[in-house]
Length: 313
Image (cartoon, rainbow, N blue to C red; front, side):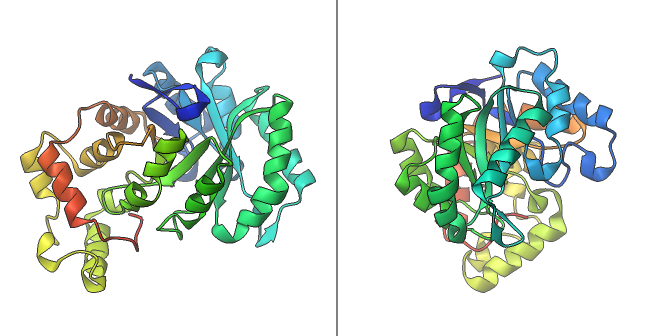
């Protein structure tokens, strides 16, 4: 495993992080037993991963808590999240505080290393910055949280409006940003400033449906052609990334996608989520491989440089 200093937090984190959400939720969403989900996390830890990301909404905090038993707590970085809004209404500060306490209990830890506002949107930012951030700062002073963070709602905020505002105000030590081959807007809108300020970055959406389902990738590419975000002649709709495999040693598109994100300047770690141990091992192996050839990276950057309307799902 390779490790990096996690921005100004000073934490040392593995370049691969295990995500307990996403479509799989450690297998919980696909019918896996709790024991199987625990085995996935524990295998990640055995492979050297020390960063685990979960959330109240995922329903996997207890699984994470059970998974880390027997491992050196001081060597692990545990991150979780809670939404600032529920059913379109702001969560009151006292209720949010109770949620943090509940997360601590479910995780079985005394301190949460990184606590995110989950899937935040720009129209929620006032409540977050004025009401809830001060609350978390007080919990930080009490030793219940080490670092404040925010994850964006990349499913709707393709151009990082929330993160741009949060980074400008410098409220958070860590941000979770959507970035992948298809949507590289973070290179322009987020990463230069996080690097300048020492804000740590977690990459989500490195691999989503488009990278494992050819039919979905084709649909997205057709949409991007129609919108003028990619040139018609730039990609073959039926084998759009065949050339990447031909010009590199990547064996699969997901591998290439992970490597593309892992070696992007300004990305500290890349999250990968699965309920399958073999899949986990393959993903971590991909993240530990060298960068794609420079010519491949530059061509991918050029082809998708104008894309701003999709996220890869």
